[in-house]
Image (cartoon, rainbow, N blue to C red):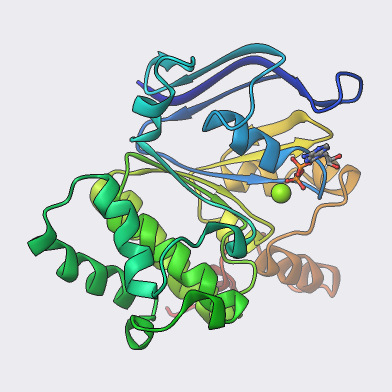
Length: 272
Ligand SMILES: Nc1ncnc2c1ncn2[C@@H]1O[C@H](COP(=O)(O)OP(=O)(O)O)[C@@H](O)[C@H]1O
Ligand SMILES: [Mg+2]
């Protein structure tokens, strides 16, 4: 079954300028999909439609087999978690621990289990030392970590990350991304990650390229990123390893195009 099925979806904020145009897309259950595309291509709008914060102008949205409607919206939202782009808009608790607890309370987790779950998910994002801190006093990156911890604790069936690690340094990004992949692999949670981080996108199972409200490409990362015509036409950045491999090729070295740093190292210094 599909986790999310979008069928000829269109949307406009002002009734004039289309932001999403006749967009169809399926996100398989248990998959890890990355959505990439320039600012303004409609990525966040798409996320808001999927969780029913916006209503489509035309077309249908199915989440876990149910067509979104006013009647089933709250029921569907029990299964979908989202971490927004701007972490300032999503704090409710007066301490980090309260904030992580909020989602759990809403999901009727017994109080005696809650403390352990809060501590576990704070540890996963490196925020164990901040459980008593006030969210407003945290840095942007720390706020993003807490917002992610809240979702990790709830572990809903589908999680949408909308540029949720944009304020983290490369190491922080890598470690949070590792937690997200783990969630996908070990708990079979469907991940939809909107990202500018091409390293992260190249680790997804499926990459969707949005361009001006339309799906410009969908496919495995290797197929999308190695499509030179597409990548240069949309002026999208390539994952670092691929960029480097191409530079080595240009310099006359016999290096295959690869997506990960590990594969690049293997190309340059084969271990056997
Ligand atoms: N609340 C809003 N009201 C009017 N226009 C909006 C609103 N939010 C976004 N837009 C416009 O919709 C388009 C898509 O925006 P958005 O979905 O945020 O793109 P992305 O997340 O890919 O950067 C942009 O042109 C943006 O200016
Ligand atoms: Mg956005």
